[in-house]
Amino acid sequence: MIVTKRRSLRIAAVSTLAAATVALAGTAAMADAPAAPSTPVAQVVAAKAAITAKPSVSFVKAWQLFRVTGTTTGLKAGAKVTLQQKQGSKWVTLPASAPINRNGAYSLGVKLGIKGKNQLRMVSGSTASPVFNVTVR
Image (cartoon, rainbow, N blue to C red; front, side, top):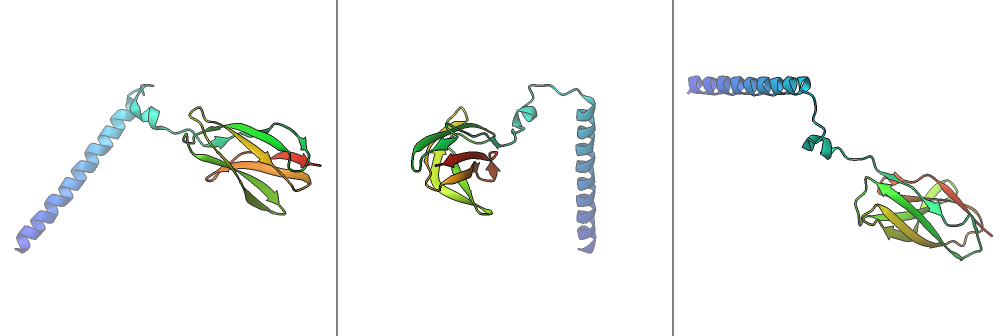
């Protein structure tokens, strides 16, 4: 019985080494071959997620409707982008969101009541747009 256990372990070790050698040989062969641009591996590489945002106005009256439009890359169609406002040192999520369409674009109607310069951004998950300003008079 001890002999068969040792033999099983020896066979398992040799099999593992053989598999690793074959894998390394395949990797080396792939490194020598020029990469074809239409390989499935090239298509799997995902674009880095990004969001742009542009308000329709720079100045508004309190509670006046304005639009924030923008595009996204690397985010799925149907995902939500949400408006955040900087209040003090914290980003506060506002109850305003819009779905991303199949082209990666979105459009959101917004009303703000806090007078003064408002720092805003659009977020989806951990991806955020650059900060933009809208002043409420």
